[in-house]
Image 1 (tube, rainbow, N blue to C red):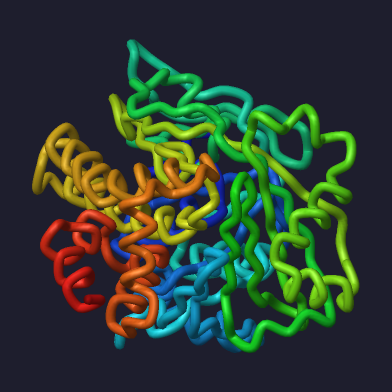
Image 2: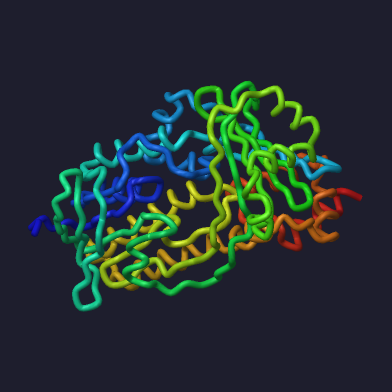
Length: 402
């Protein structure tokens, strides 16, 4: 039995786990982070970091490191609806651009930053079980590279271990706002498909696809169809993937002239919120809530959760507030922040044509520079959909179009 007593053990060292661990260690706490993987390694991800995520990297002193890896900045988002395209600037003065870093690069950078902050990082460590005593989580049991089982104890175990979270499975948190899988998405990487700093999306009936630049002069191209077509299409992923680009002939030509450099990766995800805390445990990132990847909000959501959760745990550890109050605040702040985007995302993920009144609004936004920037900032997670699509703002946009 390891006699180490940590303030926190974080299970999962990627976009939610390493920042949570790093922020706690920077505040002087003793933190262990464990992950089955070794780094650098890849994971299924749209790996788009919208401006709010870029702002977090800047706050943590890590943005320069990302820029130094040669990841191209993205300064324009364009949404092609067929009859017209809405394009604009996604960022703010604080973070004017987005980035699409490969997870091999981003996750390694985050793990290293956690380690530098004083976090004990154990790679290739498999958690076998979450240790519970009298209904309270007190630690983890698992094995490292040598295969020997060890137990470690902590005041709090943080599950940053994704949708299939072991911490969530052990603690069975309440789930709410649940929605089924709506969309199947598949992506791969192409060379010879320059994007010139643009993130481009095409919205068509029952189809949606997008492209943006990443490391090594590659472009990620993702596309998908309703989950109802999963069975029918799964036997010819490539054929169905390439066929949908014909709905945007100019883009199809660009893909046709490019070279595919990787295999196809695909998934479909459920949509849910989980209560992100309980006696001796907390959840961050996809472990705590998840929504369809069509709006690619996962990374900056994980970053924001890391900050909120680390702050709440600091308040608890330092005695400033009770665990229940601080973590209750973490949950309500998270939910308030993401619920409007969750609703918009799950609506978009149906790939159903927008209702006529929404089409009218989109047409009014077209050509109005300020409104187009505003729309793009919603999709980039900068502005809440509740704010942009408020009656007052839409009234202004419609009035300006007449």
